Figure 1 (cartoon, rainbow, N blue to C red):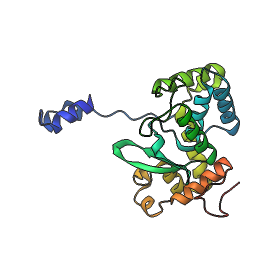
Figure 2 (tube, rainbow, N blue to C red):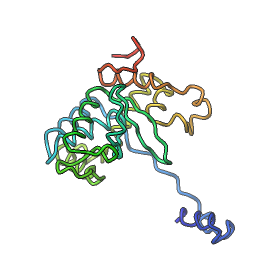
Figure 3 (cartoon, one colour):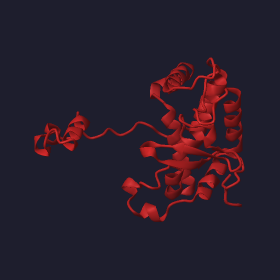
Length: 228
């Protein structure tokens, strides 16, 4: 309703003074219950996703994509830079950025696109019948994981927990600046203030963090800097 009245003001249908939503205090946003998962929990998720369901290959790819990048449902084959192990993530507001991925994930993405006949400018993630995956696949995946792993249902774990886990690890090991860049938040630091703009991490630093995370070399990683 706030959004509706805000647009009505913007379109000149009502005045700001006549906006009833402006007179109502906005409730405080509740703290998120998400937390970083342990290595053991991540291993359980990967195992369950890749060994159960009607398309474990697809689900294993989705989970790995979320662990490394935070997920990219809109990813297209033309967004893959195979040589440099980069994928182009298209995000809100029409923005895009390049995100490093491991050679193994790149190999699986290319194979998936080829085997499921994804057109170059079409969605990469597809069902076995070559139809594009929708967000309903995510619902199915996490409901199934909740049945297989009771703690997933109890804690209401979702794909965003994987992103939370990865970014927490990157921040602890490589610092806040690299975590911002890894998440794609470096251009809009928000509560970090303007200082974040001056400590913006490079793509090479993000690739270095990915190398340590996955245990695989990356063509853009800084030499000798990856943590094991």
